Image (cartoon, rainbow, N blue to C red; front, side, top):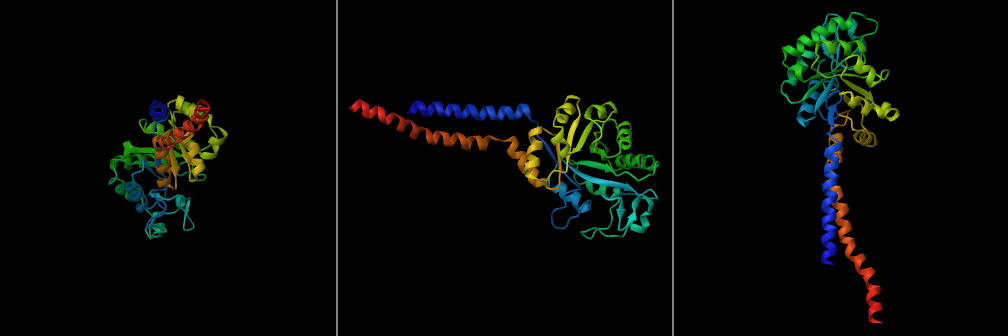
Length: 297
């Protein structure tokens, strides 16, 4: 009996060791990006100053935000092309600056956003430049202003760029060659993007369901893999199993919890192994009983 228990204990330890080693070898830890900041909480709103502060407070890898340029060249943080019915790219800042977000803040400028970000120096800034409809000079005007402002506020080195505009991505890659640049669209493969000098992909999660091979393809090219916007547990789990580098989500706390469980399977394995040890003596006794009765006869 003691010999059997010893063998089972060794087996448990071996199982735990193998599980840990497998995770260490196969997976580097996936990171969490708060989509439009952390806004599903009291006092916050999408792309608000509060959202970037709250993202910093919960310790995410990065906080994503959307930037547009007004007609008089003021960079503002807002997801949609319009704000209170005004096309941002065609509207002077003065016209929309006092309009309120859902939490009562006024429309943030990029300058005010970056100022708040300075309080969270370990958090990456995931900068999405919104494209403009039909304005061929929009990006030419916006990009130099963006790069200068990032440097002015001392956050250039920790900024990662994303965009649906392939032109914006290629230009960011040229202007900031040491920064990660990820394309958001679905019309290029990782190899094609790599050939354009783009260093990452940031695809919608449903695309990875169709092309799971894109993760390995990108990694083999030295590219980072981001995915948006992943909120359901089954989708989060699937992205973890694919081995993406970042998960962009509206539920950063849930994703962080699932990442922790995925990368630390020891407790789960330990529970299974403990159950096996506890059940084993009863099984051994049950099997041994007939032999004892036969010997007595």
